[in-house]
Amino acid sequence: MVRSARGLLGLRWFRLPSSLVMPDTTVLRTLRTATSSNAFVRSAILLLLIVGGAFSQPSQPRSEEDRAGDLKKRVVETLHLRPGDTAADVGCGDGFYTIPLARFLGPSGKVYAEDISDTELFKLKQRLGEEGLQNVEVIKGTVDDPKLPMGRLDAALIVNAYHEMTEHEAMLRHTLAALKPGGTFVLMEGIWDTLEAQSRDEQIKHHQLASKVAKQEVETAGFEIVELRDPFIERPSDKDGKSRWWVLIARKPAP
Image (tube, rainbow, N blue to C red; front, side):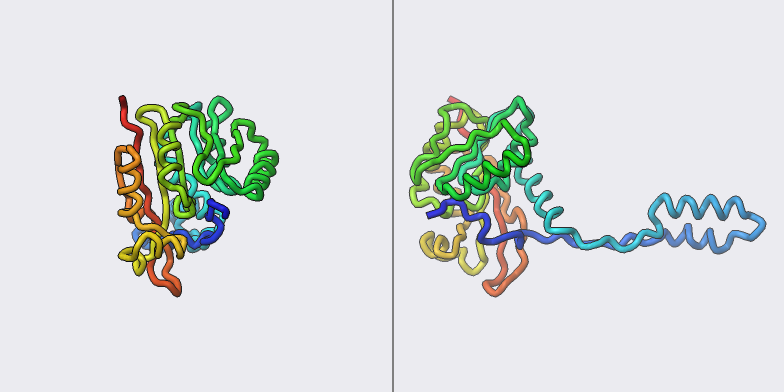
């Protein structure tokens, strides 16, 4: 079974409203009432309007690529990393977050990209070659062990893959061991409102997981909870109702 399920939901992950940029009415009134003898003044006002974007057209709907870029940036920011740090993307799939992580950490940093799917890891290696990124180590994990180096990570990330992990207790245990003391762990999953009160097994059938379920499991594994952002991103309603993404930020306790 492919543990990483990021492709299942596509980019119906979040919506950003568009806005209109309207001319300042006071400036327009000034322009209209200026006399023809004040040609210089009229020209100056017109120039200010153009430069200031007062006559700009309504903003165009944002592309899927732009929305995806914003999502990646927001998630990477939750890890509180600096260039040169070391991080892991567990259940990385084809590198949706691995690539921006590697770019952010730079040549002196490192990303361990782990998954159990040969197909996804093959795609990731192709993307890394195309991007020319050499600071990523690709790891073929197992269902109960991501095979991360012990005590080396400044941060670890699991996005939309935790619900697929049949041995999630062991995966959390190994992830904790791979972090440095004080290292950050970020877990992101989605949940439909209609499933939130259902059992864990029922949520998993729909590739969803409630934050309260994961929070308890993460605490039991030995992490300290830093913050729960629920909702993190509201998702558009669909035939199954309203849903959202949540983010849980935790850390490895200091000794």
